[in-house]
Amino acid sequence: MRKIWNICSWEIQRIFKKPQSYLIMFAMPLLFTMLFGTLLGDGEKNKPAIVLVDEDDTILSKSLFEELHKDNSLFKLEKGTNQQALHELEEKKIVGVIHIQKGFETEMAEGEVPKINFQHIPEFTSNQAITGLLSNKLSKLNIETTAAFAWSEQTGEAWQVMYEKLKLNSILENTELKKVITDEGNVSEQSGLSGSAAGFSIMFLMITMMSVTGTILEARNNGVWYRLISTPASRFEIAAGYLLSFFLIGWIQFGILIVATTLFFDVKWGNPFSLMIFVSVMLFAIVGLGLMIAGLAKTVEQQSAAGSLIVVSTSMIAGVYWPLEIEPVFMQKMANFLPQTWAMKGLKDIAGNGVLPFESIAILLVFALVFLFIGMRKIKFE
Image (cartoon, rainbow, N blue to C red):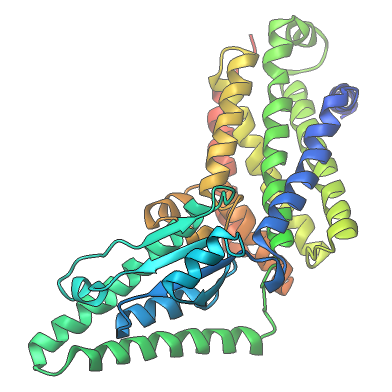
C-alpha cells in the first residue's frame, strides 16, 4: 500500500506544480459558468427579446406561438406587427424576428413542414439554438396535425375537433406531471448558472483527466515507466498508484469547483452524501475514458488532441453548452450514448430531490467498466 501511495502522491505533486493546471482545472470552468450561465439567463429580465409576426393568424400558427412561449428558457417572446418588429430590430431593442407567413396552416394541412423565417441582429450568436427549437416545435405540430387530419378523413368530422383534443391531452399530461413532481417535493428546476456550473465542471474535469492520464504515455516515452517496472513495485501497484492519483486529482478539482460555485454563484448541488457517491462513480467513468484514449494513442500529442476534440464535441451534443431539448431529435438520441448526458442528469436529480439517481449511476458504471477494460488492455507495460 505504501508503494501505491508513493506513486500516487508523486503524480499529484507533479500535476499541481504546473501553473497551467490551475487555469484548466479551476479558472476556466468558473469563467465559462459565469459567461454561459448569464447568457442562458437567470430570470426573465436577462433573456433576449424576440418578436413573432403571425401573418397567417390561424389555429396552427397560434399554437406554434403558444408552444414557443411556454416553458421557454432561451428568450422572451412577444407578438407584434411586421413593421413594428423590423423597427425594433433595426434599433436593436430586440435580437430577432420570427416570421410566420400566410399559408402556414394550408401547408401543414397538406402534410408539408413550412419554413419559418428567423431574422436576427449580427451580434446575436445563439441563432442556431433558436432555429433548432423552431424545428423541434414544428415537428411536434406536424405530428399532431397529421393525426388530426387522418382522424378527420376516417370520421368525416372537422380536423380541428381532434386537434383540440390532442392539444388538451398534451396540456393535461404536462400539468399532471408537474403536479406529481410538486407534490413529491422533487422540483429540479435549475437556473442558467446552476446548469452551466454542472456542465462545465464535468467538461473541464474530463479535459483534466485527458491531460493527467496522458502522463502514462509521457512516463513510458521518457523512461520513467521502465524505471518504475524495474523497482520492487509490482505492475498492479504501479497501475493502482496511477489510478488512485487520477481519482484524487479529479476529486480535488470537482470538490473545489463545488465549493467555489456555491460561494460565488449560489449554486445548489443537493445532498452531500448522494453527491459524494455519484461524483465518485462519475470520476470512475471519466478516468476510464481517459485511460482508453491513452491506450489507443501512440504519442502524448495524439492523446491530447484526440481527447480535447472528443470531450468538447461530445459535451456540445450532451447539452453542456445549451439545453438538450433545443437540439435536433437525432442529436438528442445520440446524447443518450454519452457519459456527460447521464452525469448531468444525475447531478440535476441530486440537486432537485437529494436522492441517489440509480439509473444514471448504473449507466455510468457500464461506461466505466467498458472504458477501463479497453484502456487496460491497450496500455502496454513493456
